[in-house]
Image (cartoon, rainbow, N blue to C red; front, side):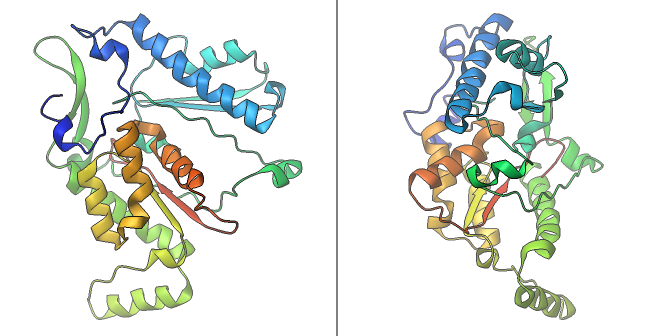
Length: 284
């Protein structure tokens, strides 16, 4: 950690769990569960208070945690704590990496989606497109992030030098699919024209998405995305400040970045918000 932090672009006020800072680190299930409940219940309590939605109205519960996978599951813990409906559909996503955003350093977020027409006026956003890319069939992509046991019998997440290569390839494939859905016709024609001439061309995604919020996995990845997609420093501010203030909050980081943009008053009515998450597998 002493070697990683100075070059990670993480600020001094970044939160790190108490059990990780203790000497020696407390890696017990009890400590992990305490941290989990603090984060999850805090996020859900805040969400329910803001939306004024009753627990009895919730029919689907989806919970993602990058690594921690207790029994009973996190969905069961939430259902029990909030006494949710007996017929609720629940999905517990673990081991899917940061891609499932829909912890390196603990952080959490809770988001409420609804398909009820009566909720339309209360909604802040409308989900227009969801594009997924899986590169698990590639050995290079599959092996770039792994959870394994080390020689001292501790477990951790190992990343290889192929991470950036795998991420770039997966993101490029995802952008090709997404671009077909959201780019204006003029940009699509430019892409086709350049392809016919075998010349590389980066579409101007800024023409259709006013806010770009990638997963804040680290400074190097953000730098690569900015250079690849041609975004300016202002476009990357929300993600970079999320990394600086909170660190890599793993599978919730795109929502932290959105909250930053909202707090700055930059998200206007009619704006398109583009969130992109990626993680082990490799998946986007």
